[in-house]
Length: 79
Image (cartoon, rainbow, N blue to C red; front, top):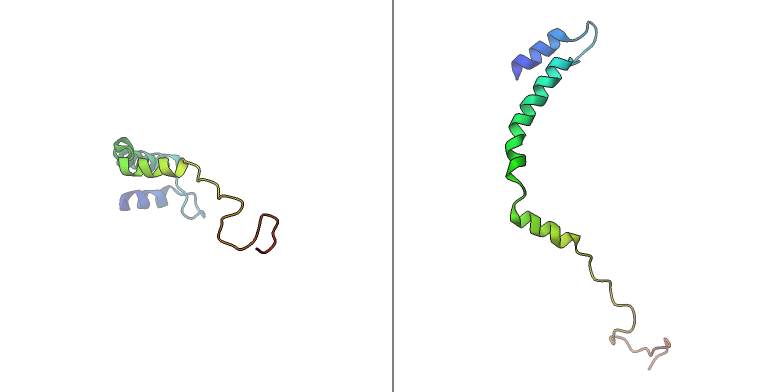
């Protein structure tokens, strides 16, 4: 990687700091694809896929109405 950095500084336009030309960008992209292609091919572990499926299921809506925990009647008055 050090070689790529030194080559990039040689290819940068005069007065312009840190520019990477198209060739350098292409090489970096190729190396990154080579490194991560194997990871992508491995797929998602079953454990993670199951967690995602659980997250996709909508949560049940909370029950609206009388819960029986209070002392009020259906009209909002006290019993």
